Image 1 (cartoon, one colour):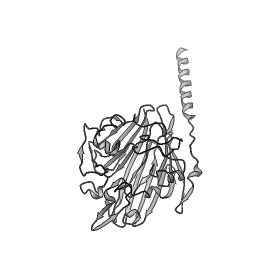
Image 2 (cartoon, rainbow, N blue to C red):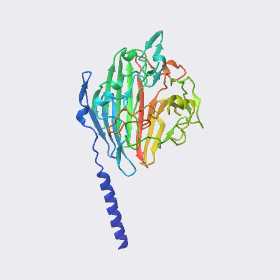
Image 3 (spheres, one colour):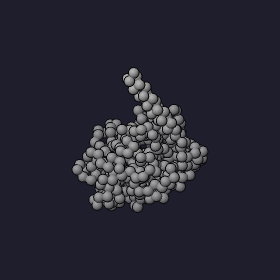
Image 4 (cartoon, rainbow, N blue to C red):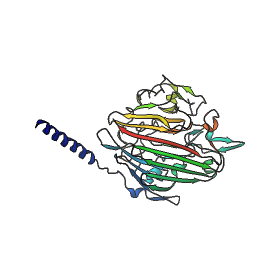
Length: 375
């Protein structure tokens, strides 16, 4: 009889636990209608993908952005772990790079120019003397064409010859896929009819506590990289690839973001925190583990896999509180971090780095996976 009572009690507890998890009904802090407008003659929309495990991703074709990503903690409670805004108008008003696909060239290009054969191409100088993320009006401010089929959302864009100073008529395609393995997979393809340097990434800021819920200094980070590309005071790579094992940049074993971020080391002073390209320990074009972040209070874990040779670890050093996020809380310094898969910064001017040159008839292809769990 005692055994029967114990079984009944356990059954009730399991039922109540499941009921509580099912009661975790999402209420988005924004209205779908606020994402339905027209930008440069093209409609913008909001798209939702949800898997059987409770992960919900919302996207907009304005900048091919991730607007929100809800994932459960160790107790099954979901939170939005991506920084972002409530409307297209706010993305236009604030930093358009939040959650966005950055292209045709992500990260910095020195002196806002590069040469192909005998031709020098001038780019917008929007970061001192450098070009950052292809300028202030690049692909993340464009309305992409869209197609959705279940948990697969496809965005396409045509970028004309000379746009932002980049040569060639370029066709870009980004495919977001949400899987039942709790993976958000991003596939990129770009073609061009003239030789052009291509380097595409996603610029999502993450906070695994939940966006608007404090800083990210307690997050434990692992980066599968024993080498990095140091920078000068203008955040341009010096051209070196250096061993960082045992240094303040070494994340091959877990370290919290806040553990060494205020070090007086010159590199951290240049960047005002972490903002560095790591050379992933992997074979060329291999889809491999690149990095992870773990938030101990919630138990949320994010793992990153990519075919790219590098990953930019950025700790929101320039978030100044001027932008109010979806939850109504201002995004201040270090309230989000980025793990941007990429080729190396300034590679058009650094011939010793892996090439980013795409010729007519060739296809730039890249895959990145963000996988979510809790422990």
